[in-house]
Length: 161
Length: 161
DNA sequence: GCTGAAAACGCTCACGA
DNA sequence: TCGTGAGCGTTTTCAGC
Image (cartoon, rainbow over all chains, first blue to last red; front, top):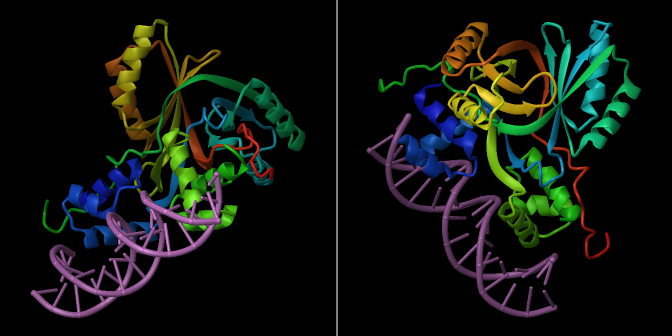
């Protein structure tokens, strides 16, 4: 992947409705070669999927809660079971295994505090957890799906640009 | 918005490359009415944008760090300044104002710990922060942009379905 | 590897039910 | 509000450079 590929990624990460011809114009490529580059990055899995992003408020899912979880059973089996449980909850958008004090961190999205409480009860009914600590977000100041591309490993373009 | 709209949202939240005709087939609608519903939801801002999601590993941005921030200057001006500073850092993908102990929470994405340290130094050089606590994610077990649609406020369809 | 053109496909709109 | 069908633009493929 070279600088042109990165330029393409920057564009489609922002807006995937752009026509291939337009992307080509912006990066200095005609339609066919630009299309082939995109095709290749899809095959390689660099581009994973194309999705529509919705307005959380308009679909009544505007409250974000971060749930810090500590467990006493640090086994692979417990994690496997826990992952399966989490997979059944569409409210959980992000799920991380952490270093430090907290073992796992969830980002949960619900309409309000009451719905979070209902979610919480359903969760602890399904699996035993030592310690759960919930932090509510008052406001989402920034949310982006655009990964920083400045760290990409770039192979120099053949023309030397 | 009725049940059909919700079905449409479910589909395009998952895969926005689906042809309108195919979406229509899946929800029981022919192309044009399906297209009109999508059009309307775009105009209303329910559908905000369409983007490509990339593989964090393949673009060398695979380490997530949660940064909990506490401030002593709880003024609107400080938040404004802080927001502007954050906007200049492409590594910050999410930024929340929190309730409780922590004032703000960032989700930062970098290639490795060294890059995080560099990011951290650049950040604190730009604005004064009372207390910063960084937690590293070892593993991203789940990441989704699909908001839960079960909480949507549904108007009954005219045909009574 | 790029260009340009042709074919296939999907989007968009006017009209009638 | 839905559906049909026609026109148009985009995507995708392919021959030639």
